[in-house]
Amino acid sequence: MRRERLAVRQRPSDEAYKGSEASDQPGVTDLELYNWTTGSADDYLNTKWIAVYEGVFRSNATLRLLHRVRAEKPGEIDNATAQSIEGEAKFLRAHYHFEGMRMWGRFRITSKTTLRISS
Picture 1 (cartoon, one colour):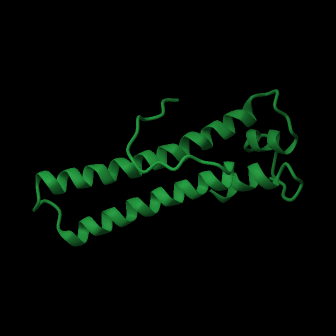
Picture 2: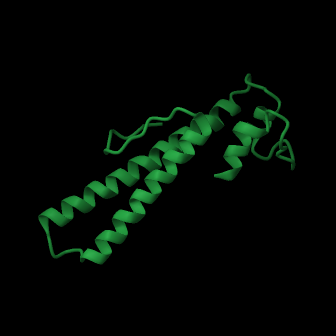
């Protein structure tokens, strides 16, 4: 994830350079050069956007499934395991929200399972 933050925030401002060859991560190279005509910079940012929302979606889906299993089959998952799953899912959801806010500033906070984003 650190690589993406560098790509969006620091590379275009000359604070960091991708290095390597131009064929390595062409979307990042296009961001560095302010080249918006090839489409690979847009593809790079769109892929990041989808990945962040997919992470939020999966975290919320895990929480929803956990609560459903606990309600329908109370003895299926013990309390310690359920607390661990819930904590990990909430942590990941917070991580993806934070990542979205770092990348784009205003980022919609989603705490419910919503429709999946199709690519």
